[in-house]
Length: 181
Image 1 (cartoon, rainbow, N blue to C red):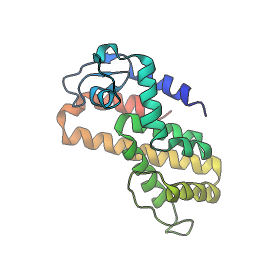
Image 2: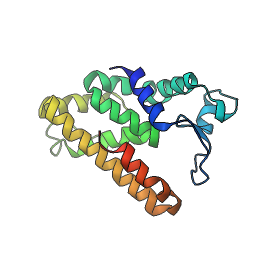
Image 3: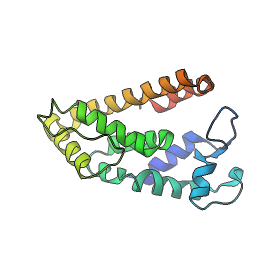
């Protein structure tokens, strides 16, 4: 899997500097919030955050730390979906979606045990993914799992807009750019 290509595509989709007053995340550049940039050690103005710095943040915090690289060894398509969702909603949310979907698809525990949706990809989550893909087939299983992940993501976007009317400004873009291929 070419994680550099995933990161480049994400940075292109996120665009440059944005300071949208309705966005609780504050100023962003390449989709990186000021809080995340500061926590990563960037001290300059957000409007000049270097693209290379944004790419390094995405690699470390949104690919390696949540162990989506381990998911990619089994299913590059699922890893790409988790990476994109994690960049937008947080990696723990993306990992929780995976755990919830795998648990719901385990045929009542017949294929593998239920997972605790803790937002961390560990040995149990990896084992469940392996067992799911074995039981359901790589191609068909992967497609169904991706649909489940996107259903959870779409439902969360709708809930965010319902709970905070200011988020309605983002709902159309979220659904247009984050759901589906």
